[in-house]
Amino acid sequence: MATDPRLSSLLRDFTDKVPHVESALVATRDGLQLASAGLDIDDADRLAAVITGEYATARSVNEIRPLGGVRQVVVEFDDGFLFIMHAGNHAAGDANSRTLSTLLGVTATVSADAGLVGAEMAHLIGSLANHLTTGSRQAVPVGGGR
Image (cartoon, rainbow, N blue to C red; front, side):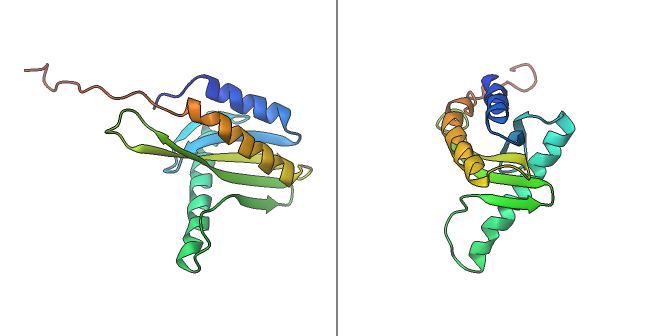
């Protein structure tokens, strides 16, 4: 998957700007890490899997009691928070390709203002759409085109 190289820069700017935020990650809803800030590649891949699972768990509540779409998942730990938001559905190429559904995951220290982090995440999501579109795929002939 090709992403705009500015996506990681947007996430770095977010982690630098929002007090007590430690990392940010954009992943597909099926667990593929697209970009991150404040994480090494292995931790980013693991966090992508975690936010995908947590978001899916939250969505499954609708099977018990219909509550509508999930706006945000917040996990509070002794020493910090994990925030997860749906980052939108984006075209993944030309009109014949699938839609790319993405999530934004953010970790923050216990000192973070949860309301501020949530508001800043929503603002960031508005900036991500232009960076989450892939080009259309070109068919490659099998066997040298014969």
